[in-house]
Structures are given as structure tokens and as C-alpha cells.
Length: 367
Image (cartoon, rainbow, N blue to C red; front, side, top):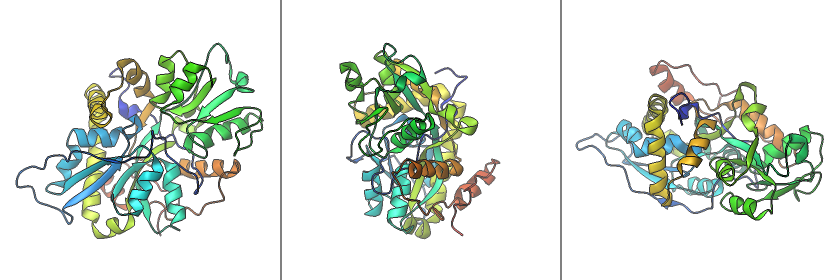
């Protein structure tokens, strides 16, 4: 990625909200892995909690967490309070860990956040900040699909029934005037729910003609000869929509607001560092991915994927409301009650102290 297009240019949140009973994030499995704890400076004073357990995915759309932990930027704000990081490969497992009290703060997509919030009737989590936007594309076999209209009658993969990208694709299909049964995926377009980790092989074998997927899966497909037909950001006003939020257990927020505030200072400073050091940030992300998965992304894939994601402190709350509406329209979600899902009090305190504009909860904050 060139210095002209930093990762905080990484575009706004790719998410369409998904059903409270099916939702998942754009992950690569379901297991959590406890990672090596960052080093605490000698003599540093602890906050109100001795440790804070943070969960995130080894994905480019979770770059704030990857870089913030890798570079020690979040730990620095926590002083003697230790980060205990865990990586997850799917939203449901992270929500389960949050519900069980195994983690305190998580980086996660809007669909599982909505799921976790509605299933607990608003009693379990709060969205406290944004993290990333964008990074979702429709990529296709150029020999079979040359225009958007050519998608009709073809086999298009999405990561999972009812997940963020699945809802987005179903909404786009309906906007084209085509009919697809949301449960079976059959209709004017065949929607094949395929795990991101096997989608590149499905493409190579010819069993799918394209996919509506997040990064880095989209760029992995491009490396196999696929072409980007549509970037989802082009469908959103201002080219922004939420793909990753930061959530917290309500009990932890109430008991340790100083710790939560310190984490948010760290994430805001991390996003600013990424903006100021785009090339170093890309190296940091890939070093973290190598540590988490055992294998870094190739230069070809990361260079293609990097510019399409935007890191943002703003949770882009209005887009979450819109995404929920898309899921309702697709027949995958009953109208959710989202009032109170956001608590941006500490984020806005941090942003104000940093001289940045406050973020809006779009009327969905706790009152």
C-alpha cells in the first residue's frame, strides 16, 4: 500500500446487521486462542482491574486491535493493568465468551453485536466505539460474469446464512429486482453459503462463479484470477458502513470505567498511529497475523486488500440501523429493538480530549 492510502483510509465498516438467531461475523472458524500477554512497564500503576481480557479476529478488519496490541499502544494507556488478548475466528464464539465473562472487551462485526444485544434483551453488552469500515467486495470469474447484470443466474458465495455479507448481498439482489429465497439461497441467483477459508478453493474448482466477501478473502480470490465487480462502499452514502465495532460487557463497563476509557484512549491513538505510519502499520498487521495464524499474508494480497478498509473511531451508528433494516427486509430478522445498544460516553470523552469531533449514536444510545 502506498503512503497516500493509509490503513486508516481503510474504509468504513462492512457490515449488514443480521438475525438474532443466525448472525455471525466474517470469521474463519469458531475457536478462541489465548495469546501472549503484552509486557507491562516496570513499576506501572494498575487501574481498578488487574487485567482486561480483549478479544478480536486475526483479520485485516480488526487492524486496530492487531496493531494496538502488537505495538504496545493499548498497553501503554493501561499502565500496570495487563491486557490478556484472545483471538477468535467467528462472531458467535466471541459473543459466547463475552456472555460467559471470559472476555471483557471485544472487536466484532455489527451482526453478532446485534445478535448478542437482542438475545440478552439489552442486558449484556454495549457498543462503545467504532473500529473499521469497508473492506467488502463482490469478486467474480471474469470469464463468466462481465457486468452486474450477468450475476443473474450465477452461483455467488457469501460467508454464512444471515451474516453481514449475506444480508448485504441479499439486499443488493432485491434492489436489482431479482428474487431469492433467503433461507435456501435459491432463486434468480444461487447464493451458496461458504466458509471464507474454503471460498478460494471453491472458486478455483469452479463450484462458484463469484463471492460477496470481506478482506482478505476478496483479494485472495483476485490473486486466483477473479476480478472485483463491485466494492460495497460504493453503495453507501459517504462510502462508509460499519464492519467492526468495539463492544464491552455491561458489568465490566459499570465496574471498571477507568479501564475501558484507557483501552479507548489506546484504540484512538492506535488509529492515529496507523494514519501517520501507514507502511509500518501494514508491516505490524502482517507480523501480528503471522503470530496469530502462523502465516502472514502475501504482499500481493495485503497490498490489494489494505486500501479498501478504513479504520475509524466513529461507530457509524446510522449504518448499523440501516443494516438491521436490510436484514428485516430480507426476511432474516424480526424488527429488533436497538435502543441502548450504544454507550459512547467514554469514547466521546477521549475524542474531546484528543481534539477530535464527538461520535453520534444515531439515537440508539442508553438514555
